[in-house]
Image (cartoon, rainbow, N blue to C red; front, top):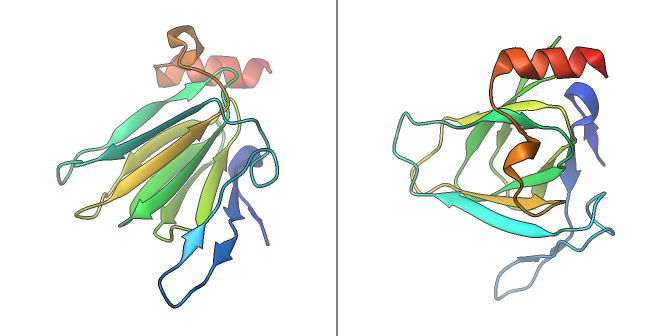
Length: 139
């Protein structure tokens, strides 16, 4: 079951194939995520106390998964903030467009997998919170 969060964000429970040899989780688009996956990247070896993200996207959608360890994602729609902890490799956090995100509190060995709806486009990033708030209240 999906859990609804700030501004259309939601936790998606991905399928798990359990086996005596270990578990396998599959992510297919658009069956398991609400967009076609066009880019995949991951964050790892994040030093203790560091944070990532601190931006929003004009059009990009993402799914974040803690494939190892755990981390917190702070979600902000310009009116409300909410922190979500990701710590299970079969639960993804769906982020629609125009949601400010900050990722912090990485555990040792944490790996954050990001699935994105578009190829990298620097012009899609909203890098200051003030600009993001202006854009989010205008839409």
